[in-house]
Image (tube, rainbow, N blue to C red; front, side):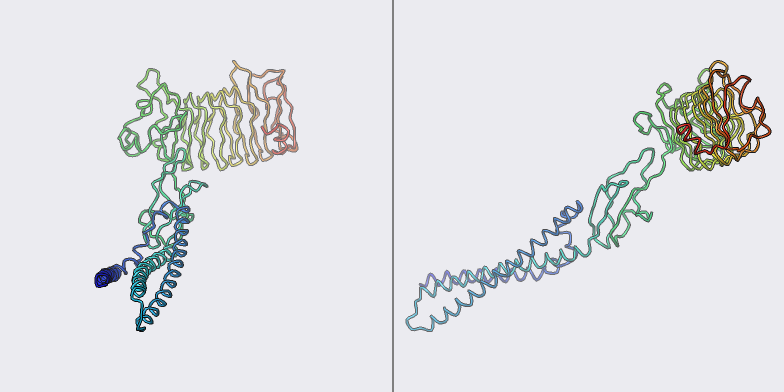
Length: 475
C-alpha cells in the first residue's frame, strides 16, 4: 500500500509541475496567440484567392465545432469528477471503508484532472484561433485582377497593409503593360494601402515599333532604337539613322508590321519607312501593315509614298489632314478607311494605288482635290454628305488596263464640280452608274463631265446615301 501511495504522489507531483509549466507558458504567449499579428497563421488558405479563402472560412467553422465538442466533454468530466470526489469523501468517513475502491476512485480523479487540463488548453487554443478568424474575416479585403473581362486572379489581403501585386503580366497586341489601375483609373502600386475591396484592370499603352507580320511579335521598339542610339535627332531634324529599318531588319523578310505614333513623325516623314539610299536605285522598308495610334493628327506630304509592299493600314481616328502624295506608289494597298473628322486632303494622295478598289471621302472634308492617276482597279467612289466642292479631275486610269469602275455617289451638299470630273480608259460596252443626291442636274455638268465620249453610263437623281447602299449592296 505504501508503494502505491508513493507512486501516486509522484504522479500527482509530475502532473502539478506540468500544469504549472502549461499555465506559465500560456501566460507568456497569450498575447501572441490572440494578437492580430497572428492573423496569417492560416495564410495558406488566403493567398490563392476565393477558393482558399472559403477553405479558411470552413476551417474556422470546423474550429467552432471542435470548440463546442471540447466544452461538452469538459462539462461532462467535471460533472463525473465532482461525483467521484463526493463518493471518495463519503467512503473515507465510513469506519469500514474499502481502501482499494477509494484508491481506484482517486486514480480516476487524477485521470479526470489530466483530461480537464488538456481540454482546457485545447479550448483556449481554439478560442484564440476563432478570434483570429473572426478578425481575419473583418480585416481581409478581396483583390480581383481582370485581364480585360476575364478574372485571372483573386487574392485576400489584410486591410491597412500594402497590396501584394500579382506577378502575372497581361498582354495586349501591339501594346506594353503599364501597370494595374482601379475601375476609376487610379494607378495601383506595391505601395498602395488597402482600404477596401479592389477590382483591378490592366493599363496599356501603344508600343511603337516593328513587329513580325506572322507572329505579331515585337522585333524592335521605337524606344529601343532611341536608347541604343540607332537614330538621333537634333533640333527636330534626323541626323542619324535615316535608313535604320533596312539596316537592322532583314530586307527580304517582307513580313513586318509597323506601329507608329506621334513621336515617330519627325522632320516631315515617318523615319523608318524611308528609302534606303545605300542600296542601288534605293529601297523602301518591307512593311505589309501599318497601325497608327490615335495620337497622330496630321500626315505629312509623301508620308507612306513608295511603300510597294504595304497591303493594310489603320489610320489614326484623330487624323485631321493628309498631305500631297501621301500614299503614292502603294501598289498593293487594297483598301483604306478615311476617318470621320478628317478635314484636309492633299493632292494625288492615292497616285498609283493600283490595287485600291473603293474610296469613300467623309463629309468632314469640304474640298476634294485630285485623288491621283492610275487607280486601275477602282470599283466605287463615294463622297459623303458634307463635301461641298470638287476642285479638279478626281482621277485617271492607265491606258494599259480597263478601269473596272461601277459606282459613283455624289451628295446633294456638293455645289460645284469641274467640267470634267474624271477620265479613264473604259470598255465602252461596260455600263457604270452615277448616283446623285441632287434633285436636278447642276448647270455646270456637260457631256464630258462623266467620262470620255461614248462612255456607257447612267445618272440617277435624288438618291440618298442609304438608298445608294441599298441599291448597290453596301458598296
